[in-house]
Amino acid sequence: MRPKNRVLCPDCGKPKILFESESKANNFIKFNASEIPNGDKLRSYYCPACCGWHVSSHEYDGINRTARLLYAYHKYKNNFKSKRTSKHSTEEIQIMHDIANLLRNKNISTRRELKLYLNKLRDQVGIRSLKGQWCKLVNICCEDLGITQ
Image 1 (tube, rainbow, N blue to C red):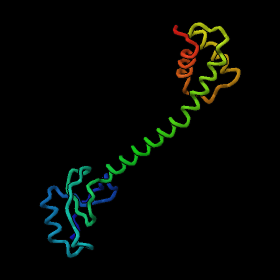
Image 2 (cartoon, rainbow, N blue to C red):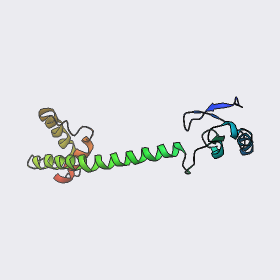
Image 3 (cartoon, rainbow, N blue to C red):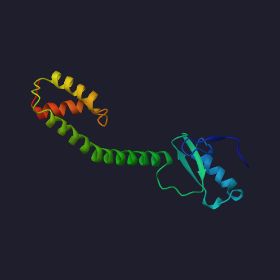
Image 4 (tube, rainbow, N blue to C red):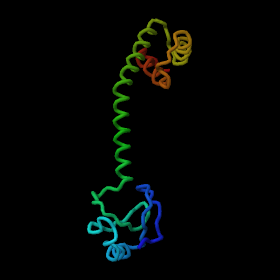
């Protein structure tokens, strides 16, 4: 018997039978297990994505698909972030310190003078590898040059 209450489960992306309660899912198993492949392994389980009960013959390891995907995403994101910060950040900071050393004898005394000079330098030399790091560059140069204003 094929019930008509099949819905697309957002957790697995497949159409599944949705039951209102565990007892209804277990009754379905009781009366239809002989007609379904792997019917002896059927079990009912609560699906938090559908807010209802489904029937499955697969073993359950305690983690639904959404939680597994979120875990994989966070693991990938953390690995990417740690590789990005460890490799590029040290190179960028070293370049910023080198720029500050080059500016040491220019008699720059204020933050405004430093920004003006860095803007000229950026236009002349073309500091493009530090795109998005401009504030960090200004702060590092101020620290290295002893500029407080």
